[in-house]
Amino acid sequence: MMARDNFRNSLGYALSGLVYALRTQPNMRFHFGAALVVVALALLLGVGVRDFVFILFAIALVVIAEMFNTAVETVVNLYTDKYHPLARVAKDVAAGAVLLAALNSMVVGLLVFYPYLHAFVRYWARSLGGVN
Image (cartoon, rainbow, N blue to C red):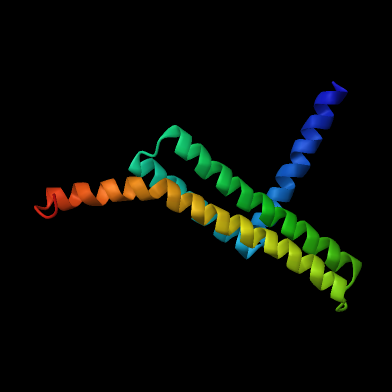
């Protein structure tokens, strides 16, 4: 019984952190919105399971990086409200991690979606009497 309560409490804290990030961080909301668009596009284009997993991992990496960035910024702000070069480094490095994760997701998206979008465009071009 106690282990289940600990798990339930831990899950509640984790969900609370996710909700906090979504509620207070504009970039987190942007990433979630972009993720919804990407997932909808993948479903619309009939992306295969393996490719869909790549997309989900790329999305998860960005969201995880954004949450760590939020955690680092919050701890730095808790520690000091004055400018300190090391505080700036911590925040910049965390933001850099989000940037790398986002760039990675863009590369994954391009590699995954290119063949599907190419086929989609060719299909519509043929159906409109254009390119063969």
